Length: 282
Picture (tube, rainbow, N blue to C red):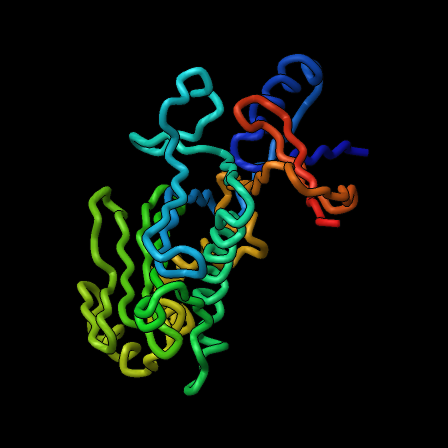
């Protein structure tokens, strides 16, 4: 009978190091077959930006680019000239907008991957603009993702009100240089490749639908590849840096009850082990 060991974990967790150590020390005199399975390719979030959403009137940026972390370089993920963080923590005072960063990220991802199914002719776009002035409600809410998939960098963005998409674009860099896939201003489209096919697709896109989402259903190869980053289930699994996003809140002036059954364990954050438990106000 053959023995089978399965070793899994997120990018940078130490799987390869463990396997090398096992082969060198534990399995010296044994015959071993190593099968590697990289599910879905390597996806890394570089930057997420949004504007005019809930409590954020101006542009806010969640960047995974590391700066000033000399002692912890071994814990970072290299991509070209960039060093990316394997984890990120969002912390601040009560009401500072921590949860709204996650809401913005989650809303954008869900809308991108489901727009072709949910956006029928009269459907509202589920954005919630900044409400504490007289003009932001009529301005579009904007989202932008910069990420990599299998070594290719992508830039995708859209801006929308509840009624329609105002702008949308997708760029990629398959040869290292940023190249336009499509660009949209209201219902006007610009294409640099496969112009005839994409023009036909654009004619079926309603004002409240994303060209990106609809193009994927019509077998546009570049759009379908770029969409892979948004189809993983769960906000933590979408970008496999592995991008653990932790909300940290100072516990002061209020009492909390710890719910031990609802917790997220986060390991290898700059060589530390952390456990974050969900808190409930009492």
